[in-house]
Length: 146
Image (cartoon, rainbow, N blue to C red; front, side, top):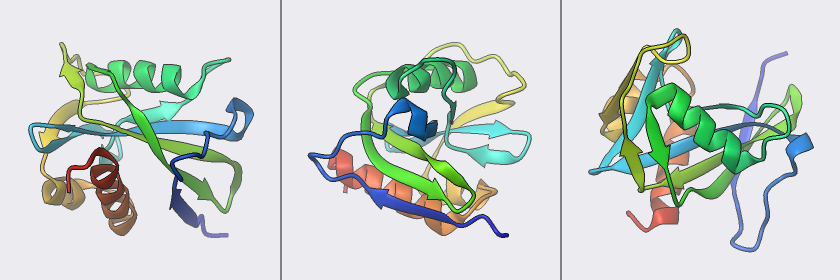
């Protein structure tokens, strides 16, 4: 069975799925007009990862961003949900244009970090480029960056 992803943008009044129904969190972060990206063993991607223990989505997001790309994020806003045909759990996407880059040290989670323009990130991205394009455009819209 092929893994098919479906995404939808959150309505303003809509809450997040509860912890038990959330598998991972991701961040589309903008700084100086560019997107924060991490290079891992698969290639380039936006930073994010799985919830651990009893973390809520925001705590997991802040931990993952610090671990993967050496950045602190504030004012992160949830804006999209991604579901998979192979899992009952959802992935939550956040966006922010309030990130602070601190010291980066390569690790097993991230070999490198960079700020990339949208087309360069899409060129380097190893996954579904149209899905990522839609998520980036949705993040821009959510932050009023269009």
